[in-house]
Structure formats: structure tokens, C-alpha cells
Image 1 (cartoon, rainbow, N blue to C red):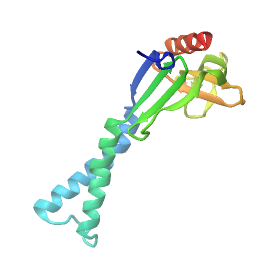
Image 2 (image 1 turned 60 degrees about the horizontal axis):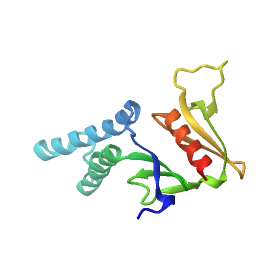
Image 3 (image 1 turned 90 degrees about the horizontal axis):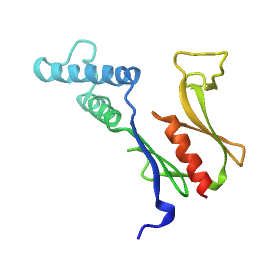
Length: 164
């Protein structure tokens, strides 16, 4: 028998793959893969003759293997259940972060500029603005939840608030 507070209303899994982040992760990775391959076949390239092999191996592992793998596996999960809104960033968070439904005072969809951190109004249309769900909590704090389907997320939150 399923507990009523664990009933899932909405679930979304987002892959956090963006071209800007992809370039920022792959450029150092490819550079370190090149240095390691060159060192293996031809000896150390010019410019890094004084760098110990252990340091190169550690840099290759961190920036050439670990960060690209972490970037590839990172996902953001948003769930709306009858008792709250749960978010999790895999693999960095081991548990869901819960926002209880009873502390949500207001829920709305609004355009949001991610680089400046400002809300967009009708007067300031920006090409990089995204639609997000903004929650106002009873403590006065604002929580911004990004979603591919902000209308469905808003509808699910409002349904959970109405049934609480």
C-alpha cells in the first residue's frame, strides 16, 4: 500500500548539457589527452619538460577523465509529490532536497534572465531569457525552479497545493 504523501504528480529529468559548458570541459580534456598521448609515444612535449609525470597523470585524470565524465552524468531531477517539491542534482546530491507544500505561498511562471539573475518583464525581452517557475515561500524567500515544461510543473504544484 502506497502512502498518500509519496504519490508522484510530476517528474522531470533534465540533462545539463550546454554547448558553452561542453567547450569549457572538453577543451582542457582534449589538451591533456594530447599531452599524455604525445608523452607516451614521443616523450614530453616542449614546454612541460620540468613537470613531473605524477602531476601530469593527476591532471589528466582530473581534467581529462573525471570532469568530462561528471559533466556527462549530471542530471537535474524535479519531482512534485502531494507533500512537497523535491529537487536533486545527480551525482552531486545523494538525497532529494524537499520544499514542503505547506510553506509555498505563491507559485508563478515568469521569464528569467540566467546571466543577470533578473526577472524579465514585457518591456525587456531578452533572447536568452528562459521561463521558470518561481515559488514565494511564507518566509519571504524566492525559489526558482528551471524546467523544460514550466506550465506542467506549475500545474502540478498548484494541484499539490490545492490537495494539501
